[in-house]
Image 1 (cartoon, one colour):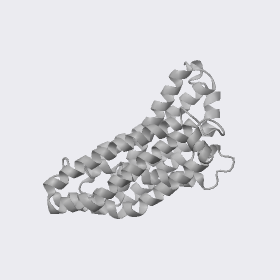
Image 2: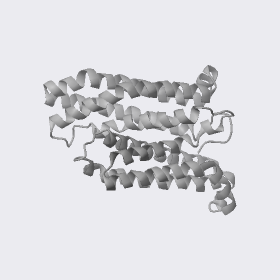
Image 3: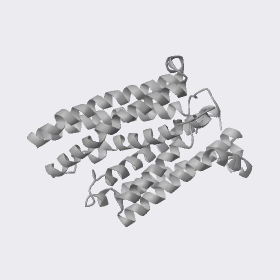
Image 4: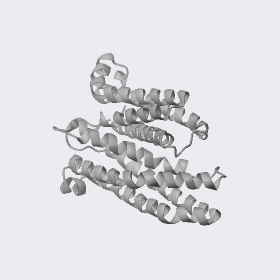
Length: 288
């Protein structure tokens, strides 16, 4: 496989894995803390199972592409290279698969605690691979990645679960907004601090952030997140009040802000997927 085609395949794979796993984590956490109530969970069950399957499949497809990276197209199914690749990607692949399986079990048993455990396991899939694992002294960085991913998933799922489209009951919509905001006010600052710290150590300080494509992509992700935080603040302070006072106007405002947040989340997703496939942190093996 030509180098450019392989890089594109890695980027598409990583973007798909990031999107499916983050949405899976987010929707499950929304169910676990009752943003999605038990009575409404059946509406999301099919999507959650689909995301669980997709994330698991893509996590294991990485092993095949790693075979191509280490050899060529003819080594796609090479058992020796697969065994070598398993040393790098096996733990994270198992974490994604275990998280997906636990989530499906939680849905079947209708147990929110089991769902939360599945979300944590899926988040660990990101912590067990990537550029933090290539650091000479990872320290707390992998744990920060897991926490960062879990909160990011919680946030990224908001345009789906908080969307007023298809939700006729204004009382339910307002309750979802208030419950999400109550959690977000504590979680989003943690997300930002962890993101800044990880960007700093992975890029290697100011010079790495400003002077390399990798660092600039991380800054783009952080910029998109900061703008989205501003929109989230508007949702909390202004839009929620409008939904309570005038549901028709409030719903229109909510649609606009959630659409803008979705665009920003896509920018952040593309940026971090490109940073982990098309560029590198300059230390250790390329991340998958």
